[in-house]
Length: 273
Ligand SMILES: [Fe+2]
Ligand SMILES: [Fe+2]
Image 1 (cartoon, protein in one colour):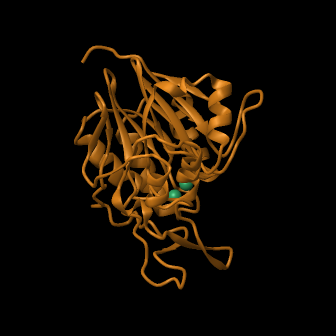
Image 2 (image 1 turned 45 degrees about the horizontal axis):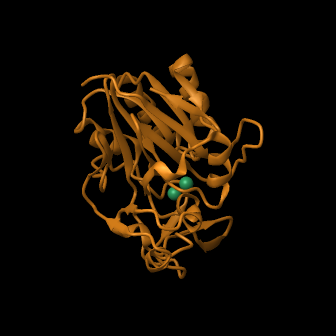
């Protein structure tokens, strides 16, 4: 494969760096490959528009948005993007709920699929991998052979407010970008588990070059942290940019293991590959 110009701007992240850039619990990325671009996730509000304007993102060239999953901190910004094509897993619109701080609350998309379509957007649903741009794949549903990566390890997720059916967050997907150096894996919250996600990534390219996003290791027990860390070390990843739901403890361990190959993600950051 010939070298391609790949650029990723972090539009929404819990932390922010740069004049006027705002932070917000959530994620959104603008991804440009050569002269074409898409969004991955929407954050939870108009912060993505605010930060994108400061960073000079050319909105009229953005072809579509893909969603990593249906939680509000990845979908809420859709209310500020009328008319854009939305790619998602069909379960993204499920009534996602979670128990936290002693109470059960709705944490799904503030807009339903019908409301998004009513605002002029077309919604394309698939459980299979979708090539959004040449060599840029929305992963499709992620198989979970590593059963120790239980999505409910940190919090109880349910599919209704009475808190009955557990929510496996089947809609969780990652973005895979093919590059000359290997695959760039971009994560939302990695609810499917990091090992599970990277196993699927390897079916696209056996060499994983970079890992960017929320690793969802916040509150992970030491055993899970240890298994994840040794998997990542063996995978010989050259660049690791982590944030959102990764957690400070995991970030600290990753920095020790990866040294200068590791960095913390923040809104306003522009990565070039
Ligand atoms: Fe999430
Ligand atoms: Fe999240």
